[in-house]
Structure formats: structure tokens, C-alpha cells
Image 1 (spheres, rainbow, N blue to C red):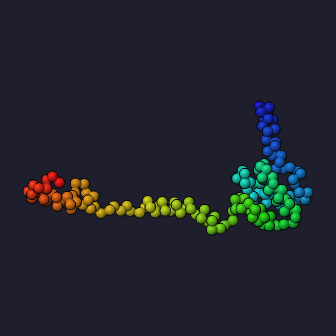
Image 2: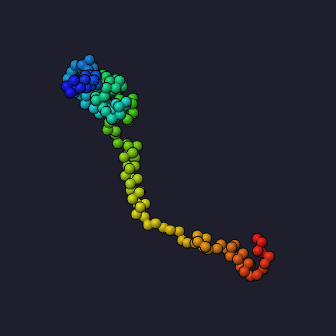
Image 3: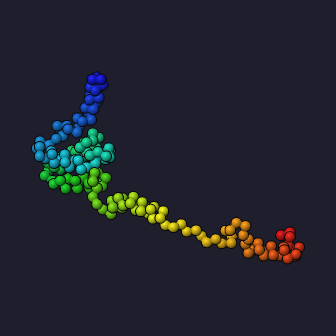
Length: 159
């Protein structure tokens, strides 16, 4: 049991090593903490549901490096996030900004449920029964032919 646990920890080591790599950390602890906070707001484009701080993907490592360069250059948090956002688009933000596109995205399920509920509550309208839709009813042409046949004019029987 201890060997299995040791093996699992040894295999998990590389996954945690890159994220806290001292070579990538900023020398100023306050700047490093700011960079980590910014990194928690940015999505790893490879892992998709992890922040760049939690991911070990190469792209996440590059994004962490970019964030740290921007922070060490004296840029504000908003400027750093804006820089990465301009380069990689809305998907890089773990909490996307409100816009018409995101409002539509969030509203679509509610609109679909509402439309389904309204459709279900609406009374079902049945079309008025016409002579053609009643089983066994004759059309005008069939009635005229029947009248000719019943009238005894035997010449129309072949038709």
C-alpha cells in the first residue's frame, strides 16, 4: 500500500512541479501573488476548465510567463488581463464579460424552457372537419358521378 502511494506521488510530482517552478516566479512576493491572482482568472486554452495557474500544459506555462512579464513591467491587473484577452479572445476569461453575445448564450436555455412551457399550455386547436376529412364522405365530383349513376343513365358506368 505504501509503495502504491509512493508511486502515485512520484507520478504526480511533474504535474505540480511546473506550476510552482521557482525559475518562473517573480522575485517580489507581492508581484508574484498578483500574477497568481490574475492567472486564476485566465483559462488554460488546452485544459479548458482550469486556470493557467492550475494547468501544466505548455500553453498555460507560456501564459503564466506572459502574465509575469506584464506584472513586472508595472501594468495593472486590468491591463494584464486585457492584454491576454486581446490576444486570445473571450474564451481565455474564466468569467467572461457581459456582452450581447454572452447574454444571448445565458438566456437561450431560459427562452427555450419558456417557449416549451407556453407551447404545452396552449390549447390544441383541431382543424374544422371538412367533408373531405370525414371518413366515408364524398367529394363534389364523387357526388355528381353518384347522382348520374343512380339516375339510371347507364352510359357512365364504364367511367
